[in-house]
Length: 409
Image 1 (cartoon, rainbow, N blue to C red):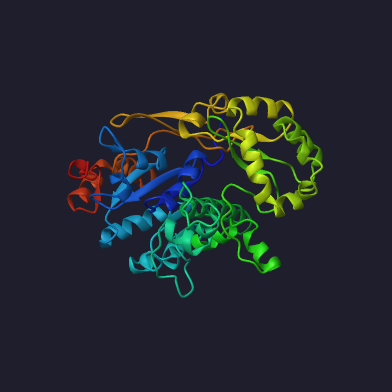
Image 2 (tube, one colour):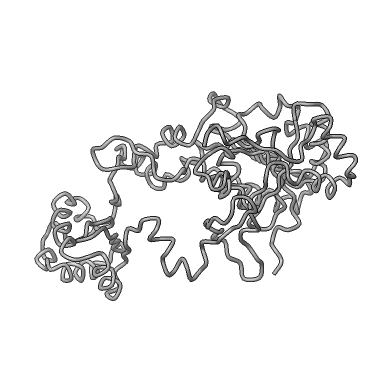
């Protein structure tokens, strides 16, 4: 099957996570994503462990299916070469601190002058405007400043960073949505445009109902552990050998009655403190210890089987080994083995986007540093081997290279 974005060319100036995650999604959808890396080391995430055969597993998982060219954008010839590539590109993605592209002489005004149809997506900590715009930011910084850490963790505890880099990942997702939106709009207008993605803005957008609840109630939301602020029971409970999540649907009191019977606590059904969802939420401090004791009497597997049969929404709290071996994950082939000639084979998560008439998914392994320089300059710009060799001898481009990992591994 054809890939839905196989006619789209992307110049990827991004590094580490937020930007590379966005361009990775575009690559999974079929776009030709060309990672533009600065010689001699390129993306700093190439030196981020753990390693397999000297290759960064971190870089491997975020840059699969891309190509790599190495250009020194600090040189006049390097900038001109990049601008020639921009003339053939549909999208440019960067996640430098705001102002960096302008200082390089590669701001959107320069790029659009060379190619009015080009779309430029910029991902930064705080956006291209505002009093914080020139401040650098990493994932944990925007999670902290965006409020996410203040609502994560156990009640009464300190701030907790979630186990995944949601500050980066949500920015990458919104950047991808922005690119797809701009490509669609270009079909009408014939013109590209600039996309400004702020990691802080993205954190606000995914705070779900916390911001709304603050304005409605006047109370600052805090951490609740695994509980839901408006539904009870809607959390993880300890079992004899692990934990299970139970999530009763809003207004489904018949499910509450059934759960009480299954747990061996039928007296709770007629307890006025727990007769409705809102009352259970208000009185959760009284209810939770009772449910904890009941759930600890059986194993996670036993509860899961019986609760599923009863139609009560539930699921085991899986470890990473549990989830990658789950039969549903295996059936949908959500984990794919990707093989690189040096790194070897590493199983990684495939794209979750499945289309009925178009192929999506990992296109191949990540690129070695500069391995596609000659090929891209030939296919995009028609350069000969001799012309590429001349650029390499002048240190404008590199056709191979990469970080020396011996000193850090």
